[in-house]
Amino acid sequence: PDGVVVAGMMGGGLRVFRRSFFERWGYQTGASMVEAKAMVADGAGGLYVGSQCEGVVHLDSAGSQIAHLWPDSACANALIRDRRGRLWLGDTHKVRRWDPQAERYDVWTLGNGSGGVFDVLPLLELPGDTILFGVADGRVGMIDPDDRLQFSDHYGNILDSPLWSMEFGLEATRWFGGIGEVAHLTADGSFRRFGQEQGIPEGQIRVIEPTSDGGAWIGSYGGGLARLRPDGSVIAVMLRDETVQALAPLASGGMWVLQNSGLTWLDQGAVSRIE
Image (cartoon, rainbow, N blue to C red; front, top):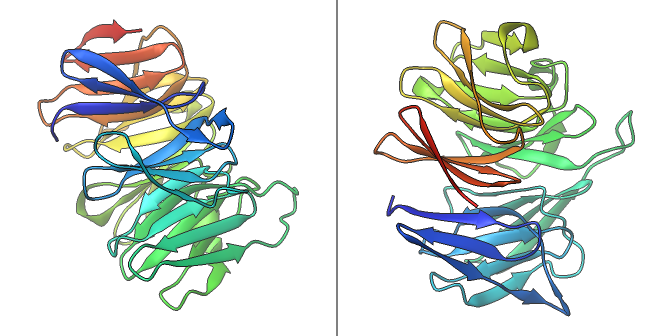
């Protein structure tokens, strides 16, 4: 809301854009600079930053390290912070949770799927203290308010490919992204599916950003950026490369797009870049 954009870097650390200048935040875990793979706000001006199998670093608003969670093994494929302030992490064959108020760690270990690949990818908090998650082998699971883990045939049949992204839309609708396909689930349980034949980008749909008109921005790692309109038509947006990692829309109507080649600002059709 304050116009600050934070980008996690594969080479380690973060880059922070504050209106007219960049600053770089670096942080150490052990002897190496960790790769920033996922991050989420802590609700107090700071960030939880997940790394490639070196845990999660908690930073304050100035970029100073507060704590290092799961330092030995956790791989941060996804991070969310729930309504109660608890941190959830999608790991390799695990879902992890940290409750800062109770100072308590919990972990759920997944059984082997049919494909033998079971990284936990997207996480989404549903009403009623339920956490929904996708697994790289195509399964969709949930952890209910009683902390029981179960797998869902209903959500698992929405797409033909594993889930890479999940997001809430208007009026309690939900968006799901797979590989070259997305689905829009309405409040009554019906859904529409859109694929490459409708213009959805190929590749992993890593981010879906719903719009106020009922459509969505679709960001793909391998297929670039597209705008899905409410009528189902799709408009591709030409950028320097097709590796969309994250989208950050602002109230002003513009949007930041994070790609391998840098950060792009999208404003009513005009595209400008910051390398």
